[in-house]
Image (cartoon, rainbow, N blue to C red):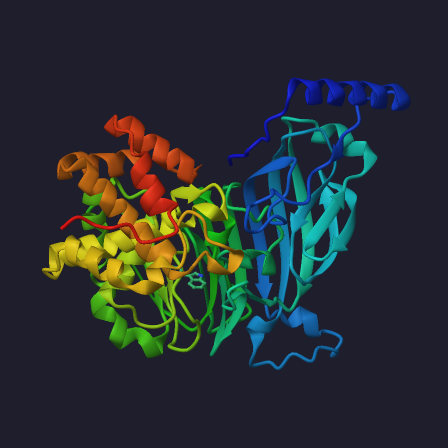
Length: 483
Ligand code: TRP
Ligand code: ZN
């Protein structure tokens, strides 16, 4: 729900004001301007959209509905229900400028129509931009500061998107259904939205699937209704979520609900073929959460859990909010990593994709901390191993050379080394963990950048750490370490 506003010079403001007044003179009223098509992310400049801030998404999705087949024209095989969806997205947003039109991000799918404030709106497509032009009757409802509702009706066969680094995201077909993964751009494959991490929102996701499939998403399961062999699952995310962390898994799942001793609600969904091999590690979720809360501060969400696919269904794990997706039975290190992301990434979310090391550096450091506390591997040893690994020195973690590099080794390994160098600089474990817990508390459910982080650390420690940042965060080469 945050929005960065570009700094404007007084001259530019004056000019804009003059132009606005001129415009008003011509038309007899204050006119809006179109919202920007992208938020100028340093790695994905077209992602997200300007001029508004989404507060809530309500998605109603129908998976493999037989209604698609009523004219007998569908070529969809009946055993691949997750190949098609029909959706209605109701998007509540606040205008951050007077808007005449605005963009949503959507890849593929057919848009059947849209309304803004209940009135039909004109719809255009240009690549991954969905451009909405509201009717003139509701123009005044899109004045700066006002909240307006957009409804988009769409359908089709959702796309699998290939990342700049070649990995697959978006809508991935699995052996018995599909799973939606959204880092960094994949969520636009299954719903229209402001798909940049800086615009967090709450969600209601209602998904109807044919029996015997289950639909699992983020947040809490509010209701489940079965009618005519189709079941609707209503999932609610009442805590802010970046759209790349939204997920939907459709398939046959063994599900379990319980709660931790601290009252965190747990929901796990496991592909039956992965069940036996997952059980022991998943039983450890309450212990991992309790241990993490000691290190990082209170768990930021109401619920937690996991979605475990069948081996081969996905290529990598993702820290989808509340309920990470695992591509097969996870080991404890991977579980620790994805649960650490609930603090680092999901609650404290990067302002832009340049800040990815704040996610992966801390999640990797969590693995090192776990290994120290449970496997007798001192953190210094994990550090040394990462230091010796040439892959970690390909580039500085805070400045990946391109969009294809944001999930590469330096972002993880060297990111974790940055965290450890801060701990060494502080040289007081209590103060170090106070600093970490203070960080997650300060930016809880918000967004933060690398600059926010370095400024925070310097302010809290009262130390000038320029050299540490220059060497470990931004330096091109491997800094020497004292023995
Ligand atoms: N961020 C994920 C994790 O660390 C991994 C991940 C997501 C990833 N997308 C990717 C790794 C693309 C490589 C390529 O848990
Ligand atoms: Zn990670």
